Image (spheres, rainbow, N blue to C red):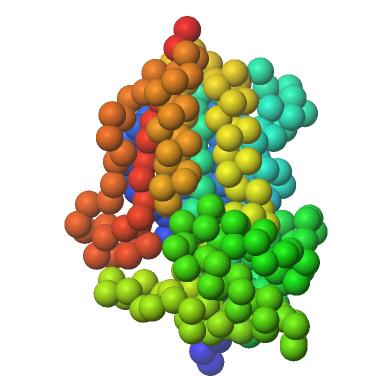
Length: 302
């Protein structure tokens, strides 16, 4: 009798996996941090390379994520690997290392994009078509969901967020329509918001959904993503061993600009990638999500 197969714990495909391994160059016995666990793809690749011949001499990967669902799935999918998991924002890495009594690590990876698992979860609101609540939080136990944010902010505040974080030139038109719509009925779902935005923004020739920039902006605001990245860039270099590497994958210009400037200007770091590393044709064909990924790498100087 055939038994039904259990659904996979993750549908997320890690971007630039070969490049991450090449530039971080994990070795047996090292301690590597994956500050954005997500579906665990990068974590697995790193853990397979840092494990030693025995538990006493082997290294491990410290994997962090704000998303409790990602952590729960990883506990199962990464079982048996040399991985320690903690729920934390990557900008709070120093505190996590202090708890583990680890002074410094050999490498840190941050993949600051959205995971496919989060997009597929109808209860989170990351997908434009989701009928569930417009939440957009990585940690659903912290801060306020996006539907509360757009119900609370004034029109000019909404317009500023959509313009600054989404680089959306129709931000004022969108904000005006949100305020008009919520006066009649609260906007509670991703589907409601995306329908409203599509009526305000002309469809582009590149096929990108008109709601993309607005959702990006609200997600960044709700999760304080740019603040977290700025804080991480300021704090993480001090917890890298001399020669240790910091690799960051970003998905939009706001994040990439922060990383580029930090790697160029921080005297603690040597920039190893003059231009960002991007996906090759084979990966683009297999994983379209990788088209926006940009990897930059720096090394901790002595």
